[in-house]
Image 1 (cartoon, one colour):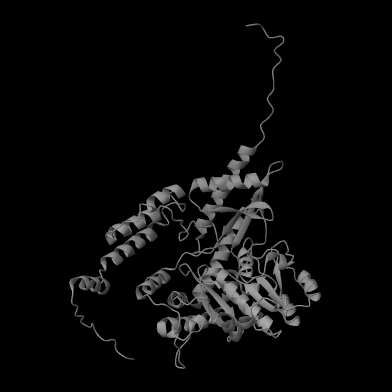
Image 2 (tube, rainbow, N blue to C red; image 1 turned 90 degrees about the vertical axis):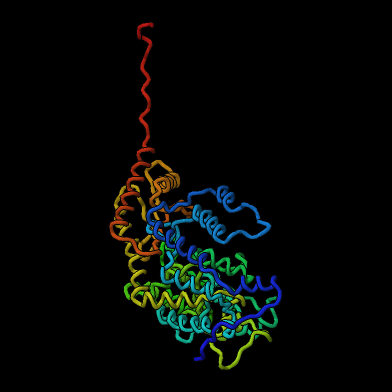
Length: 508
């Protein structure tokens, strides 16, 4: 390994140019230390403060929009204003009281690695622009494939999240399915191409419909497959509709329903895909992580038989936002759909991985450093434990609420999601559920949000950050029960008022 040379003296003629050079080459660490101290202070407070933002949208605008200065301001002053303004509108998603959405809490090792990534300032475009970043992706990708039990020959893309990961996987699917029909999408384009039929569940995540729309598959062109009460794709309905299809086919299945956590029957669906020559893509944003757990991997049995997979890193892996992975079994199809090449994007046979072969971007953050660091820090057991403990948290809360009159659990609790409805005879479940949500939010101790599922308003609780203790879950369940009891009392019908007969009353 070559040694990096020491500082090279620079001789500059002209004072103005000298100032510019000094500003670029001489680093003042004070501002970096200030940022670190402010960040540490926030992390220390996050479990003590309310998880809800303190300021409204208009108040935040006033804090940020103080005008664009003509000349620059002191670094410390700018950073202080930024931190004061931002912290007024932060959601406590990295704390213990967050149940609002499926979001991770940013592992401290990941934060530290992310700081280093910013300090190094590498553009992870091709190997030669950032050799270390390319190799970090290569190695971390190998770890992820092994952890998730995916085919060893699969290629990996490091991207922003599961939406873009599905876009990448489905791009490879579109390219390959047309290539099998003798159509070169990359040269001939999509106009006049053979029609591809996309089979997708009624209850697929909105990210799937977005990715398909980006690829030119409008919603009206999709073949919708019925879902069961848990939100799982119905294999019988899929088989029926595949049987009458004569076009190239892409099937989109799901690991981890957004409201129930349920996973599709991948064994049956993958057999159907194989028998019909279809490409199977799995949206496994959080659910596919069950494969990393010996206790829960049965939920995703058969998922390894798919052709492409989309997974989030900023959920259960706790990578700081943003992070996602696309895995494609057919590396050639993946590269054909994504690769960007040009005369100035230098490469040699001795180079390592070229990230631009696997993602749409050229200029991109070096995401592999943080993922590598977290995988090393957590290890195989650490990833399994966080998935299992989050799922145990959801199951315990469900057990604590089950049997309470008027609280309806909408599904089997098999993973990390818990969806509830609150109801009493003669009252609107939507109104009562919203009232419970409002009271929990007013209490301020737990971050919760309502959602709409199958035209019904629900309280949807997600467990995807650092696991909660038993006492934290029990305290939360007691809070829900108390809020529900208050709502029941408020909705209790008032006895009709009895008017007195005053006809024989003495006159005043």
